[in-house]
Length: 283
Length: 290
Ligand SMILES: Nc1ncnc2c1ncn2[C@@H]1O[C@H](COP(=O)(O)OP(=O)(O)O)[C@@H](O)[C@H]1O
Ligand SMILES: [Mg+2]
Image 1 (tube, rainbow over the protein chains, first blue to last red):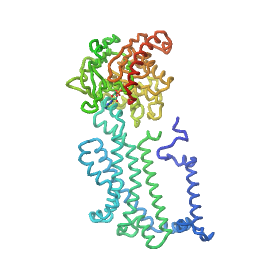
Image 2: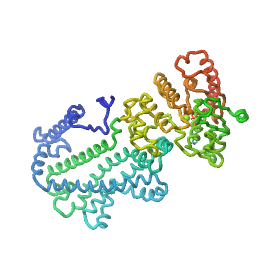
Image 3: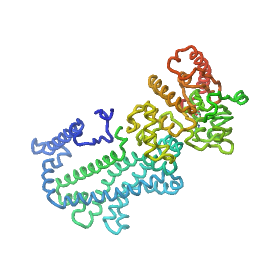
Image 4: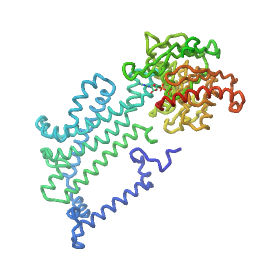
């Protein structure tokens, strides 16, 4: 069966098992590339002290060994993990709310033309407003900083989710609808058994893109809002704090932490997509 | 074509008493009458007998799919009537036929639902119609797939099987509904000759078991004569019946008939008619849009 063929690209490059990853040349090429990149960076950062020549720009960045040192220190502090926890919480709250509101909203726009006539124009006017432009207004509007951040995070994902769901549902092959109808499907069947599964790939595309946006938004919102009232207000605030404290290493630690957090979240979505759409494993 | 309306293309007595007689009378279909005004079918008449395999050939864009869509109830007609077993499908007071499981379409590009296994695809009709419980429907689907020679594909998704397998499964998905008419729109287009011949055998085998009326659009003349009781050659757009070739080759047919003299005569006869229309279509600059 073709499924076993190694050249076949899997959905989003995701491999279903860790064992599979260890024997997968792509996985090892990725590891080698990361190590090579770290070595190059180390060399550039230390070039001034080793050869007396400063590499422009990258020479100012602390070397990975120093960053790792700073990281090792920081992981023993609860504040660092608190930042992870807070950012992750906000991302998930905004993201999940965006799915819960956005998916039905997008589907309703797709299947009902009156709903579309009424709600699409205001939606399209609000959509181009960057999520961060909402920050001041939501700080005023919502009673707590926490709610403001969650709201802005929600907005970041919401528009993308809706646009993807709408596009996906509107471009379902009309022959699927015709086939189902001619076999006697009711409107209810059409919606649940054709439109919804037919839109599923777009739902997950929207979720993946939306997840990326939520991380961007949450970090910026944390910086702007001062990260809430408690100590350790998220990874964005962690970076801001490190900047105020003049610790270049910690800034990089914060940045890489966000990269890792974002990657873990995207992987989780790919995995969910995989589980929800077994037929997509083939492509 | 006035000749046709005076002498409507009469149906041959293939299987009198069976079900699935289609009667197309003076059907005209104009797309976008106020605007672009494309006359796709013009005063077209055709009688199809119950249990007939009626092959429709004609230049691209002549209006074959339009006619099929009208029978299936996917869109309205502008004038004329279409009856199925004497019941009006569409006519002056009811321009668009209702879609129904008595007429099932198998599409050019295949329309198995990619998110359902082949078994669940086949079981879909009886389940949504409430005729069978999901368990019964899946059982019947397995049975019918096996009957059609499709063993061990029930658990697979359409994307996992060859296009030939998928197309055969799609015909099984149609037949499980016990339709009166199977409407096939160039189902084997873009398949290689070898796969096609397997498809033909499988289709004829299913036909022999069900004797369902088949309305079959194709570009392939050889296919049309090999499968059909009649080959209806359409004119270039707007579609009318140009010529009907009666294929009196006895069934069951096998590939030997392709080299018979009888076959060659019929082929030449149909070819002449198609060729004439193809030239007209080419000169009219009709592009492939189907
Ligand atoms: N929805 C539509 N609106 C306008 N013109 C159409 C539409 N659908 C088909 N046509 C035109 O009608 C003619 C017949 O189309 P069709 O029935 O698909 O031809 P074919 O014989 O190749 O199946 C073509 O010229 C096509 O461009
Ligand atoms: Mg066509």
